[in-house]
Image (cartoon, rainbow, N blue to C red; front, side):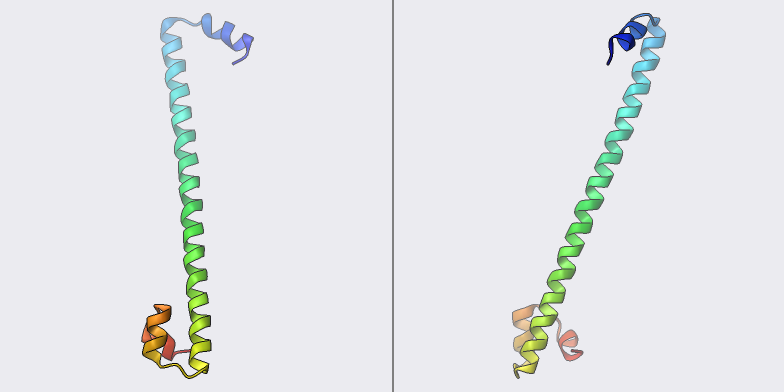
Length: 89
């Protein structure tokens, strides 16, 4: 807060100060809610991206194992992929 803002605030009536304080609280609350929402969305997007990357890596490994002649049930055990997913490779 600048010196001018402090001077303006000190010239307000008690009712005006209360209204100003409430409006500032409302503004700060909204900013915090938006900041939290953005942060949560970023974290969720990162988690989804990591999960997608891990699934793609498992598919790549399963394909290599399938080409090497490993049994489908073994591939499923090592990659945590479903037998249906492995059969579709």
